[in-house]
Image (cartoon, rainbow, N blue to C red; front, side, top):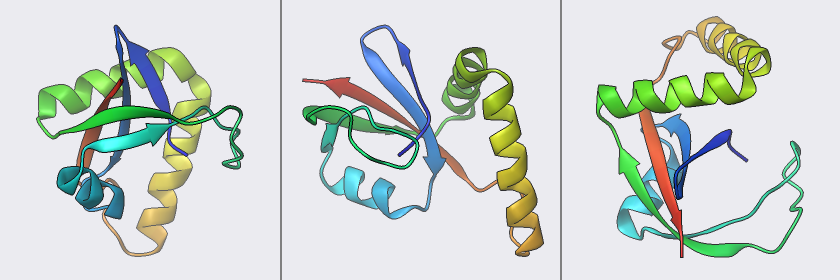
Amino acid sequence: PVWFVCDGARLFALTDLHSPKIWRMRRNPRVLVAPCRAGGKLRSKPVPARAEVLTTTEDLQRVQRLLIERYKISYRLVMLIYRVGRRLRGQRSVPDGAALAITVE
C-alpha cells in the first residue's frame, strides 16, 4: 500500500527511488491498482493501469504538496515517524525519492 492522490486523470504516489517496485515498473510499466485498507486488504478488484516514474525535484515537490493537502496532519505525522525510524537505523532521514504517475487504462 502507498499514500496516493488524484490530480486530473492520474494517480500520484511517492516512494523510494531504489525500491524494488521502481525497478519493476521501469522494466514493465503495466501495473494493477486497487483501493485497499491500511493493512493492505483489497477493497475492490484490481484494474489495469500504466505507471510512469518521475524523479525531477519539481515533480516530487508537486506530489508532496498534493499529498499534504489531501491527508493533512496524518500524512505529516506518519512521515515524521518514518524519518525518525530511518535516522535511528543510521540511514539518511529522507531517501532518494521518486513519484509514480499512474494512469488507469
